[in-house]
Length: 349
Image (tube, rainbow, N blue to C red; front, top):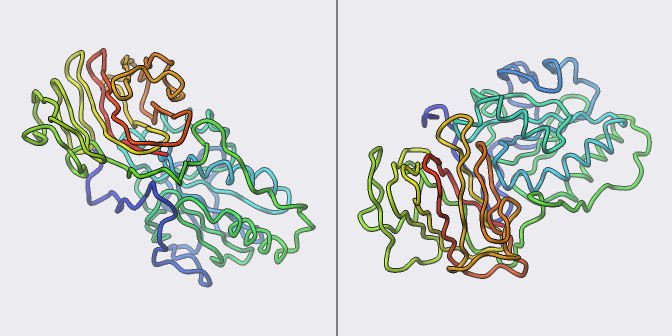
């Protein structure tokens, strides 16, 4: 489990771009070796990169963690910019700073990168040293650095894509790049990367471990670090969640301990996602989801069939519901047909 001492303040959001942290454009990056990424614990898709090697190139630094829905929805832009502008002098570097304990395992990060077609260099930031050297506070975050090593533009959370691409193109021109052609944006994401329905999104990210949770509604509250038999409340209000059956609530995740354990959530959004992981390495857990007591049918998400059945096959983010129409308020009931699933977080879109 990640302790509070080595875990950065979580300021990712599900309701739009985040506010700006302390780092401001115009000065050098606040790194020990001036744009060195010296704190990275490993590099993927690249040998270690240094400030000296990157001088003369425009650099886009993107902080991410692979289960973050906000980053996933911004990824189509970062990927498109990298593909369009790398021959004009752009270097994109992803910095993977993990939110959950299983995201520290590079064996989980690699297949996520492959599935998401991430071919650019990634610095593995398991100790958050790169995160802290940038004074970063957000997933996702974009930092643009010019060819002289100066921080020139920042963007946090989702959005600001047109402004970020315009800044990127200006920096390439300053560096002497030939005409890069028309701007890439707007970019349309598909599947899990599709933009949120911001007009109907009324629910915020909800953590399911006792350390950071809110809105828990089962009678008696969460019983920390011990097996407990939970029951459903008489009603759920928007933003509340509940457990039914035998569960063990941990600081980061809550684990189902018997077949038939249920997780309930009252939400107002088009999409419902669940970050979850089998408790045993290599195992798979079957689940079934009902929406307002019925099979989801055309409202089923990417990871369910229309009857609401799916399987948790590894640690990651699962899309349980994507309404075929606008987001409205409803109650999802998730039944775990096998024991041994850790549930970490709900996110919405």
